[in-house]
Amino acid sequence: MRVPDVIKKCLGFVGLRQSNGEIRWGGTAFIVSVPGSQYSGYKFDYLVTAKHVADEIAGEDAVVRMNTADGGFVIFELINSPWWFHPTEASMVDAAVTIFAPPPEIKLDVRNIPVRMFLNDKTIADRAIGIGDEIYISGLFTHITETSKNQPVMRTGNIAMMPDEKINFPALGVIDAYVVEARSIGGLSGCPVFIRETVNIPLSETPGGPETRPMHGLGSMYFLGSMIGHWQIPRSMNPALAEAVNMGMSVVVPAYKILEIINQPILADMRKEIEEQRRKEDAESAFLDPSLKRPPMENVFTQQDFEDALKMASCKIEK
Image (cartoon, rainbow, N blue to C red; front, side, top):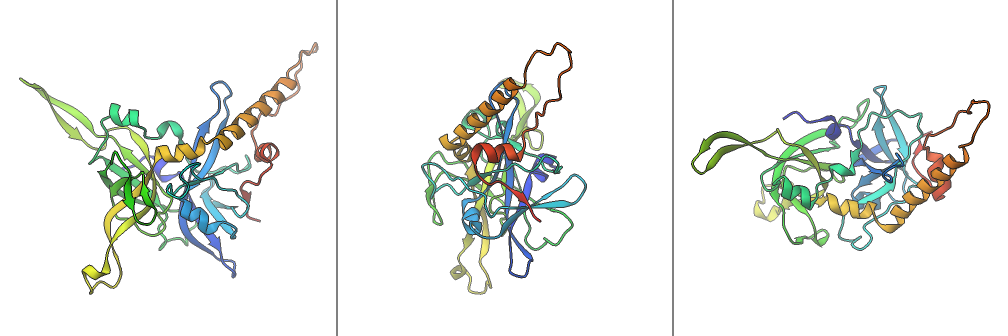
């Protein structure tokens, strides 16, 4: 099934610069867009990846590569980027976010995932989303990285389990998670997972009501969560296997857990502070001019606004 651009173009590839200057790519990140208050018109962007990826690159010469509108790519440095984790379950929610505020002159060919696309309990109930619905996974294929720009690999599968309780994933413990059936590989850690609802098409009237047929590929698309790992078949099951084989079952951090990170008080307060600062600047620039000539106003929300308001580093372009 052909997939929309938001799935193919929401990615950045995460890597570590080696001592010889080369970059070893090994993870995926994506951008989530959060709207400001109802009438402000502002939006705030966050780079999201798996917590175990953020832990691995913390303090290292880390970078993220994103495609640009001119057909190339740009590399942002992440070495000074602070990461935020889940406020109450940091050890069990394998997700991390950092502020993403590239300079406005950099034109990226990247689609942000809006929070309105996040799957939640209401949507699950209203759209009857459940086991068997199609899922789409877009991420880094570590065997093909020496390309002129990011070339994500697309994998498809279906929801295998949507438990109404926490499940045991030995790498983390007892966690909130979805289970999907799709072959997982290295490099997909931190990548976004999307789900498409199944639509029931009326076929004909019957005494018991209209007969319907479920049709895949027609429903709306939602952000399910972030891929963090998978189960492997133990080598002891078949000594002839040279390496562990993926069972096909992968675990996904639910979208609502990522939203809990983004909406934790410290980040919510930062957004309010920035909006308040911008409102004050707009108010100071408003005046009556008897000459009817108003000087031009800058209304671009730049990286410098983030740095001045939050007194923290954000993404920097590789020199």
